[in-house]
Amino acid sequence: MSLVKKARQELGYSLEVAAREIGISAGYLSQIESGKRQISSERALLIANVYNVNLEDIFTATRFGRKEIESLLDTQKTGGD
Image: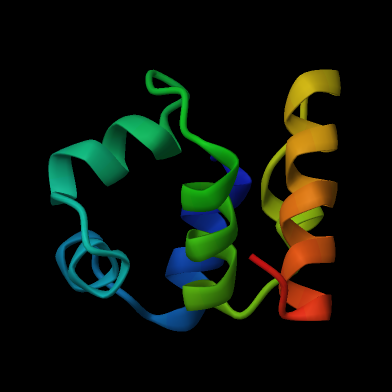
């Protein structure tokens, strides 16, 4: 079982409820959970926030993704654009 799916289930969210909270279709979320879909760092961060977990706890970042995520997190901390 993927860490993304496990985090969703620990919240007691169905696939449909979680997808609605994230703003995507249940089918798309299912593909993310099964590893069939690549997602942006912004979407990964949104999922982690909805699930109330650290991004690193449910997603394994690639080198490129890690730099992108660090930049995104820095921007959010400073409130910059």
